[in-house]
Length: 406
Image (cartoon, rainbow, N blue to C red; front, side):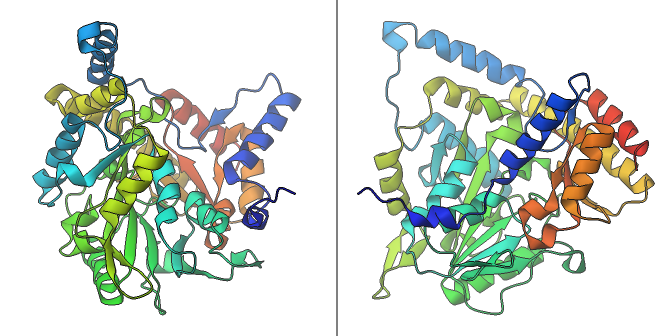
């Protein structure tokens, strides 16, 4: 008799974005003539930067000739891309990261989901609330979460992010082993100061803990006082793994390219207390389960770091930040309390009612899709997330529709 991994049965009934898609599909079936504007899922809408397209075409042409054809590439990624990342995203900002500490992948979602495989099942995990669902769900699948009761899992330490703490969680009162942090935050759009991030690094160092730092939205930071990498904090190399993505930075959601930084100083421990470097363990996992990102896609990603590419990417991010600013100003004008919308593409809105009720109101009355905050955790109840990832014309229309509804 073949048996299943029963941890999957401990997952909540529906993945958040699957439930949103179901409700939107049902609405469209009942209202075939109604145009829906989607400001829910964080998918980009603008074309890829021209520099990336040119590099992609050139690389595809290389694949057509015997002398320049590429087959399997290095699982860790081509050196030309890893070196460009190390120099432009880290060393230029004073963060000591080398190319051989960077692992190219096909998505930060995959990496943040897969990284937990290299850790023991009985570790104590701390996860923010509200939170990107993948962090929690993958630990449930691995059997670390415990039983579900009143919307929370017994073995998870929840780091509550509320209006009271500016949506930046406080340090845990108990000892934890693995800590998930995401800034600029998904879903709240909150950012973290250098001082508060330093406290997290100090905690990890004092408690032999590890921080998994999701910086997928760092390109949206415009305030120079806000750290764009955890490695800007002294000591972070020993206690932090960082995840980045080209999806939101350069619109690669359909092309797929990201990277994870695992410093060679970063360690975890066996049952005897002996330290083991995580760089080698992650490399072993990747070389066993992953064949790497295609050569043309990596060439396209490397073009982000050219002079032309940097200008085009900044223009792309500015476009979405302009959308976010418009949404934020309109919602505040409607009388709603919001965070995010600057240094972030997400606006976190106090809905003044149940999250799913507000979602249904906007969908049914305005034809606008948002994301219910309750789907991100208990502390998300009563909020919704609105995404700036859409065309400006649709964003303006969506705000006009919402203004006529609420």
